[in-house]
Amino acid sequence: MVKRGVMAGFPIMLGYFPIALTYGVLANQSGMTTVELTLMSVLVFAGAAQFLAVGMVAAGTGMGEIIIATFVLNFRHFVMSLSFVNRLKNIALRAKLPLTLGLTDETFTVSALYRKEAKEDYGAYFYTALILTAYVSWVGGSFAGGILGDIMPPRLSESMGVALYAMFIGLLVPSVKKHYRIAFIAIAAMAVNYVCQSFGMNQGWAIVIGTVAGGFSGIWILRGEEEEQ
Image 1: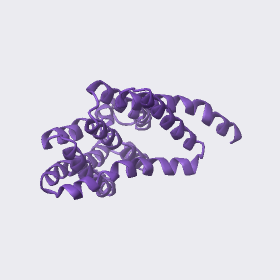
Image 2: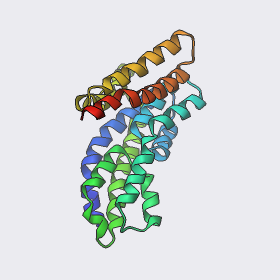
Image 3: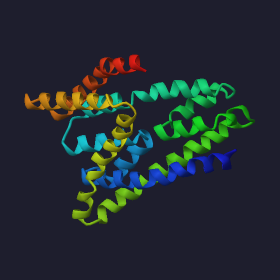
C-alpha cells in the first residue's frame, strides 16, 4: 500500500518541486529567511496561499491582513476535507482526520481517482504515502529555493517574480474555459481591490475585501448559469 501510494503521488511530486523552488526563491527575495519560508511550507502546505502571502510580505502588509487573506483563499479546504472524510467510509476517523491536513487541490483530486484503496486492508497507508510524497516534495523544493535565492544572481531571481502572476492565471483560465462567467467574478474582485486602493486603503485589506467581494458576487453571477444548465 505504501509503494502504491508513493507511485500515485509521484506525478504530483514532479509538478510540485519546481513550483516550490520558485516559491522559495521569491520568499527569499521578499526578505524571509530560509528557515521562515521552509516553516511556512511545513505548517501551511498551500501553494496559492503561500504565493499570496509572499507577495503581501514583499509589499509590507501587516500580519492580520495576511492571515485573513490566506484564510479566505483556503476556505475551500474545509469543503474538500468534508468530502474526503465522507468518501473514505471504511477507514477509521482517527486516521482520516490527520490526513485532511495534507489535502491540496492535487492530492484531493488524485485521491478521488483511487477510491477502491479505501476498501482494502491498510487503505490508510496508501493515502498517507500519497500525501507525504507530495508534502516532502513541496517542503524540499521550498528549502532548495531558499538556498538558491541566496546564491542566485539578483536579476535572475527578480525575473522569477512573474511566476506569482502566471500561477494565478493558470488557476483561473481552466475555470473560465469551463464556466465563462467566472471571468466576471475575477473582474469584480479586481475592480473592488482597485477602488479600495484608490481611496487610500492599505493594500492588504484591499486584497481581503476584493477577495470576499468577488466570492460573494459569484452567488449571483453563477446562479444564472446553473439555471441555464
